[in-house]
Image (cartoon, helix red, strand yellow):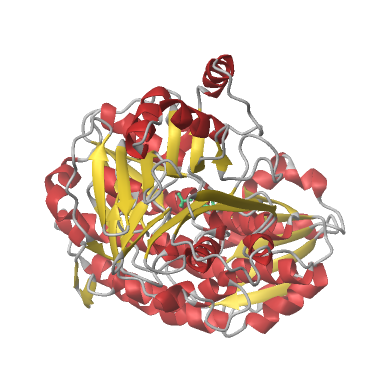
Length: 608
Ligand code: G6P
C-alpha cells in the first residue's frame, strides 16, 4: 500500500515521476504528492484524490529538475488530506520523505522530537522520519537516514531528498518493497518494477535493512551497518504492453480475458507430454523435503487464501496428506504448532503481503520448510521461501484479483501432480489429470465468449443490495471468491457460504430481494445442491445457477442458468469462477463504480 517512485538522471524528472506513479496507483489512490530540487531549492506539491489531480498542478510547468520523488497514498495514520499526503518535510523544508509502511514507535519519537523543538504539520507517522533525518543531518544524507533507521520500529520503504545533499536520492527498506531501476545514466527507485519498466528492464531488488544511494552517475547499496552490498542486476521479463490496458476499458476486464493465455503461460514448459512429466523447476532443490512432508500448512490472505482452500481439497484428495489453510494474519499471532516435516506454503500474487510474509517468518523460526506460490518474480515472499512456483502470468494490476486466482489454483494442481510423480504414482490418474488441465484454457475461452449472457443477468440484479453465493466441495472456495469480487468492486454486500450451511443461518435472509448464486456443476455434490436450490426457491429467493453444459433440468429449477464446460471436480473452480468474475465486473460497471480502484482497497497490502 502506497507507491513510491524516485528519479535521478539526465532527463526532466517531473513527467517521468508522474507517469511512474500512475503505474503504482493500484497500491493506493487517496492522495498523492511530489517533491523535487531545482536551483538548490526544495519544491513540493500535493493533492487529494487520484494522481491525475496532482498532474493538473503541473500542466504547462517549466521545471527542469532531474531529481525528485513522488508518492501515492493509502491512508494508515491520518485521513486523506493535503497535509497528510506525502512527501513530508522537516521544519525548514530542506528534506522531503515519501514512505510506504508504518512507524510503530511513532508516539514515542514524536514526543522526543517535539521536546527538541520540532514542529509537526500532519497527523502521519511518516512526518517523524523527516524530522528524525533533520535531527541527524549534517551534509551526508545517507548517514542521517541510517541514523534514523536505527531509531525507528515498524516497516518502511522510503525515499528521501534534501537540499543539504542535493544530487542524491537515498532510499531504505525494511518490510516494504523497493527496487532500483538501472537506466542509461539514470536511476529509479520504485515500489515495483512497473514504474520504471518504460525506461529500463534492469533492476536490483533491495533487501530489508539496506540503504540505496542514487546519484546521477552511479548507485550504491549499503547495509544499515554501513557495509557495501554487491547485488545481482536482474532482467525483468515483463514488457510495457503487459502493463497497458490493451484496448480494454479496465485492467480487471483485460485480466479476466487474459486467463486462457495466463493458464497456458503457467503450464508452458511444465506440462509436457500426455503422461508428464510435470516439471516445476523451482522445486528441484527441495525434493527430499517434499518426500518427507507429513503435513502442509497454506498461509495466505484474500483471494490467495481462497485459492489455498481449493489446494487443500486437492492435496488431501490426491496425496492423502493433511492440509490446513490459514489466514496469514491469524497464523502469525497464535503460536501455531509446526512439527518437523511440515511444509508451510505461502500463496501471494504480489509476494509482498505483510501478514503472509510475517507468517512465513514465524514458520521459519519453527523450522518448517517454506515454499511459495507467487506471481511477482523477485518479490519478498518468493525470496524468503527460496523455493516454490512462479505463476508467470504477467502483472495483475486490477485491484480485484482475477487471473491470479485461476493461475494459483492451476499451480496448486501442478504441485499436486509434481508430488504424485515424486512419489512414483505414475498411474492412469496422473495422465488423466494432465490431459484435463491441458484442456482448461480452451474451456475458459468458451466461457468468456458468452460474456453477453452475464451482462444481461448483471442488468437484472444491478440494483440489489445483498447477494448470497453458495457452493459445495471444490466450488465452495469459488463461492467465497465470487462473493468477494462482488463486494470489492460493486460495494454490494455479498457472502459466500458452503451450500449446506445455508440452513444454519443465511436462510433467514432469503426473500424475493435476495439473489442466490449457486455453483451447481455436475459433480459428486450435485444432488445435494439441487435440494438447496429448492429450499431457496420455496422461500421466494431468486436463483442464478452456474451449471454444467447439458444439464437441462437446471433450466426448470433456477431463474437463470449459465452453462460452463465439464471438467474434473478439482479443476471446476477455475471454470466456475469466471462467470462470477464477469458478473461482479458488469454489475460494478452498471453501478458506475471505479473498477480498477475500488474505494478503500489496495492491491498490495504491505501493512498489517
Ligand atoms: C489485497 C488485494 C486482494 C488480494 C490480497 C492478497 O487485499 O486487494 O486482491 O487477494 O491482498 O494479496 P496477495 O498479493 O498476497 O495475493
